[in-house]
Length: 262
Image (cartoon, rainbow, N blue to C red; front, side):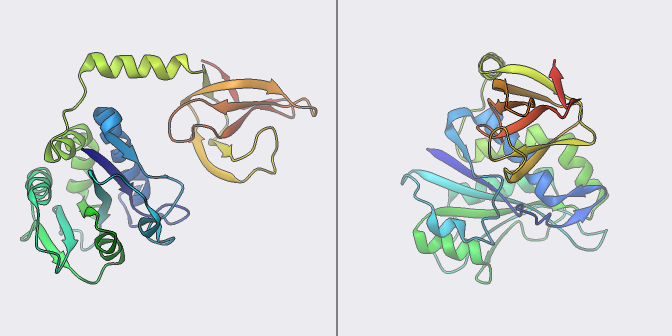
């Protein structure tokens, strides 16, 4: 069984905001931890897309044994808190995965009167149902509630493992995680981002005309391959692993060092 994880919003849409965080950033951080512990059993959706805005679910072509989760955080009055699972109404009710996930999420984010609800007014659940996919949208607490935001931050790994357990996926061992980390490092040379406040990630090599597809914050480590100068004398590298694998960053541009070897 495979798990396909869609982090909500993105592509310029931050989602709900609260307590110094954006929903799109928070659910992408969670998605990475689910992948971290789930390994090859987990596939992450394209972080640069908004699957709601571009109708991405309707264009998916996933194996029959794949289950989908879409990650969100809710927003409301500052006193509102708790997590719940939303499924499409009229398709036969919740399955075992839905029930297990609702129980796990509600345990970490208590406060909802209903932890598993059916709705017929949301686009993505309807799109997934039309394609015959096993799908559920999960509200991981309220970003407008300080307690839920703290729980999300402090218990992110516990939450990620709860997702895997709900789908019967065993979290990787420490040894397997270390091996995966070593493999990622072996794929490229480690560079520390020194650009302030962040370094743009571009779609094309060796040119500032490439579309900006993301950014890496100052102080973060990025693994690069194919590091070389272009005709203008600027140095570029190809991202070897992670969210922006296959995209490009400038190491040195017009004499200014943006990345240096870690």
